[in-house]
Image (cartoon, rainbow, N blue to C red):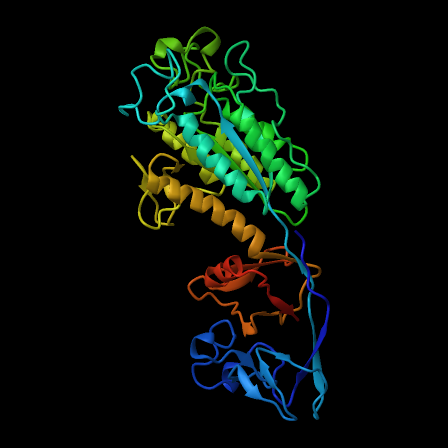
Amino acid sequence: MVRSSMILVSVLFLSCGRTFVDCNPSNCPSGCCDANNECDPGISIEVCRGDAGCQTKTVTCAGGGSANGGGVSGGGVASGGGAALREISWTRNEPLVVFVVDKSGSMNLPLVPTDPTCPATCGVAFSCPAACTTRWSRVLDQVNSLSRSFSTKALEGLVLFPDSVMIDACGTSGTATVPLGSSVTSTTMATAAIAVQNALNSAVRSGGSPTNSALQTVSTMVNLVQTNRQTFVFLVTDGAPNCNASNPENACNGGATCECTLGPAALCSAAFCSKGCLDRTVNVVASSLFVKGVRTMVFAVGNEFQMGTGLQAITNIGLNGKLPRTCATGNCGLNGRCADAGICSLGVNTLDTANDRQETVGAATRLVNESFKCRYSLVRNPGANLQVTLSGMPVPKVVLGGNRWAMESDNLHLVFGGDFCNQLINTTGLDPLVKD
């Protein structure tokens, strides 16, 4: 959905003193002007006078009428002259979401190996009964749910891997299962979501985890990067990445080390000298995607990925993809580690426990909601005295516990944070007024 505000002209009354220039500490009451030369909203002094001093946000104007944050109802020019602000038109743009889903044979295994509803060897020798929650049934439940919820706010695509297992269980065709379209409308979003869900529901699990090749497929997708839209990759996997024929780790060359992902080291032989080894290079692909403006988040399922150094390998995908698991509560999962920056230096988002599912699905949902509801593409570069209001109240640019607005580096995208973003997400029909 694209929405824009009309270009209007608002007249400011200099007799009321609202020109919205940066304030000057020498002209402000003590403590009013902050380190950024902006009037401090923390003491309810939110606009600047024409002489660069501060005043309260609600004043009575000469000639009648009142101003709240800089807009004056009714137009007109007060005695003493006036200064005009231009309203800046904007669009809100739905993001692009690509699900990259591992459908390797291990997805047939029980989610919890000790689950009493799952008979021994089910998922290997025979299919697990419906009462047994498998890794794949958990993935279907959660990814289908996300796809349905995104169907009105994001355009979806899908890459299933491996998608060809006729030769050595590691095949990828290099083609997206559900390509990204070039048109983003309510119809195309709904249609793409249905296509994603249908492909997931009909997928047959087999083969290995050629994660590197799958992300390479994403990198070459047509329409992956679109003007004014953000793109997110959600990688869903149950195991350490392998199946890379170019893997520098090789179990058969007598030199490079190999952490065999297939089981005993002897299994990483013949055709699997390299393909069977843990692929630590996959994070490089995540980095190359980020260079294109595409960020990657990892959803892990089951306990296999936590074996050996596989956990670090898939953690690095999220770190290099710039969407790592956060650890505000200090939780990075089993064997995880929280860094000082509030992110997991070891540990990824998972779909296993109820708490983990809530955290993971919540993080993905929040990401899409913020992109759609809290990020505005301006039709032009704003001037130095950009003013932003929500419901008639000024929104500060200064950081107040994350409650602020900010411009992205291109100076064309306005982003809201904290409670202001929450307000935009949760209030139907609410959008900012943007002027300079």
